[in-house]
Amino acid sequence: MMLICSVVGARPNFMKMAPVVEEILKRRIPHLFVHTGQHYDDNMSRVFFDELGMPKPDIDLGVGSDTQTRQTASVMVAFEGVCRERRPDLILVGGDVNSTMAVSLVAAKEGIRLGHVEAGLRSFDREMPEEINRVVTDHLSDYLFTTEESGEANLLKEGIAPERIHFVGNCMVDTLKKHEAVAIARAPWSSLGLRPREYALLTLHRPSNVDSAEALSALMASIRRVSSRIPVIFPVHPRTRARLESLGSSEAGDVRLCEPLPYLTFLGLMARARLVLTDSGGIQEETTALGVPCVTLRRNTERPITVTHGTNRLATSAQEIEASVADVLAGNWPAGRGVPLWDGRASVRIVEIITGESTSRREAGIAVTREGGR
Image 1 (cartoon, helix red, strand yellow):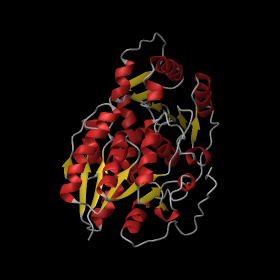
Image 2 (cartoon, rainbow, N blue to C red):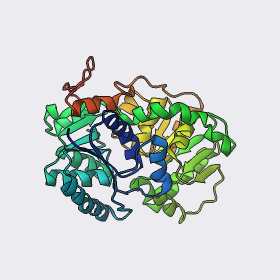
Image 3 (spheres, rainbow, N blue to C red):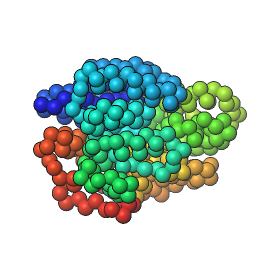
């Protein structure tokens, strides 16, 4: 049997790859599990393996944090050694972090087949490092597993051969559906003295929002005004905390900063939030799956289905952000509708395609538009 190598590197990868790894192991397929170490502290790495039931990595490359270029290079050098020693038949990567692109480049150089979980997403904004990572990874991949209908349209427009594209659904939703009940049962809001639907949840980490002192200061001023209407819980990404420490504000409000949260704690808080404010791609999908209003603090999204079918709205200016929050609090927000194939079985479809049990690029009855899926 072929040897499959699954690679994770950062927090979003764990939720995407956990159900795929579980399905591979369930079928007793030879498997090599590699962690690049891009995220390495407990709350952003180890605790995710524990809570998601993922096996301990066979290999931890331990690259740590660095500049984008140096981190990418470190992963490439370390992972090349793994490939030359173990010679996997197929490498699986997820998402759009630096580790994803680095591993993809090594796979191409070493002549090893590559599968990309969450392929085809495009913001059409090359200033986003993640966009570069997505495009490079997709064009090097032999299997492109898409999460929404726009993904195939984007890939076809870029000249990707249709037989390489497989519309399978969303692995993050697989993970969410498996753990949602347990996360809610823990009632994480109670330790904060809050009640369900009476708080907002905030995440920030995009360079466009946090690397400019002016942009971050303006954004936090708006968030503090929002927090005067509803308490805001803010688990702070390490790179965001460093930026915040240089800012001061005299504005009143109820923004509660805390360390990055374990997956189940965060999922429980998100599932029972009145609304979520974020610049994360994955959280746009999770809130759509949960039916929770989401205000995305960006001018674009690579996940358009969260706007057309889901509960997501884009907002960048203070006026847009605060108007969106007012709409949520007034009950003037779309409830969302079902997203095709977000049914908790994406990982099953992926493994069936890899093993040859399924050769169809589309699930029966699902017509994938080639005009953009918007």
